[in-house]
Image 1 (cartoon, helix red, strand yellow):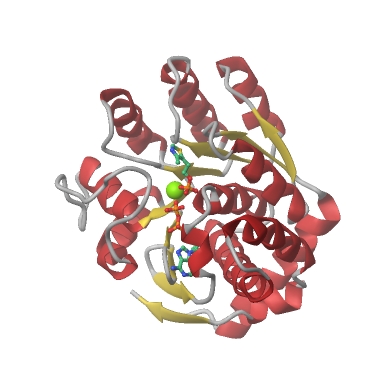
Image 2 (tube, rainbow, N blue to C red; image 1 turned 90 degrees about the vertical axis):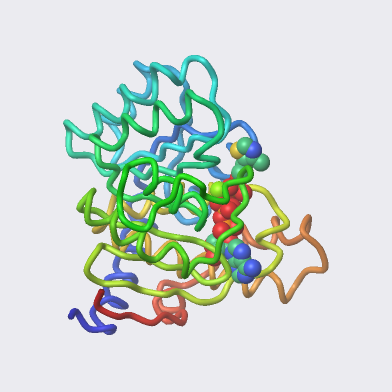
Length: 278
Ligand SMILES: Nc1ncnc2c1ncn2[C@@H]1O[C@H](COP(=O)(O)OP(=O)(O)O)[C@@H](O)[C@H]1O
Ligand SMILES: Cc1ncsc1CCOP(=O)(O)O
Ligand SMILES: [Mg+2]
């Protein structure tokens, strides 16, 4: 297995490369947290661009270094935009991050997510309930049809999603990041657990979405597994630091963006994580 030192060195290089090169990662994302996603992408050194229409998604898929696709608030146009964008991303070999927000709600969401199975998202990022439900929808190990998806928030523990995460990563050949009190990141052969964060992250909307957007920024510069681990480590570090300086969710959100911006590559690489073979 690759050593922890090698992983930390790759995390450092990824953070520095992004800050040096200002890479663009386009997004198709929900209307609730779109602004926070863009701000988080800028805070870590990336460049953000949000689109809704099929031809604009194609443009960004080709012009950017990676793309973020979030299913949060579907609109009729997404029936066209999302499968088309996924097809272009798959055919051009561009890394893309899927956030299957609220999988299980409504027929359009289910239909689009089913189509995504063949387009193999490079990184799947979601909370535990979403990861379990997506594996269920795709007929993979660890998934269940009767998942506890109740909306956009998780009702499952991160450890309950371990089998589903590994199965999804094996299917796509990419990486899967399951978020929660601790975060689990796997490429199907290695599993990392990243520690930190804050309870305030459950009291603001967009912690998960913006994490996905930042994973996409890092995916422009490194492998799917390192991109997901780097973003998770940064979020856990920034969340921990922001919590110490605020007294509620409103000020937390502002402070959190500042901590994303201020964290040094060395500190992100040094944030606590464990690793094992699976
Ligand atoms: N109770 C918690 N303690 C520490 N960090 C948390 C907690 N809940 C969520 N986080 C962090 O918030 C971010 C978003 O995770 P999560 O809330 O699971 O996503 P989503 O918003 O998609 O449900 C991740 O970085 C995760 O580590
Ligand atoms: C509240 C809500 N409703 C539809 S999308 C969305 C945002 C979810 O954001 P996150 O998953 O990052 O909490
Ligand atoms: Mg979410």
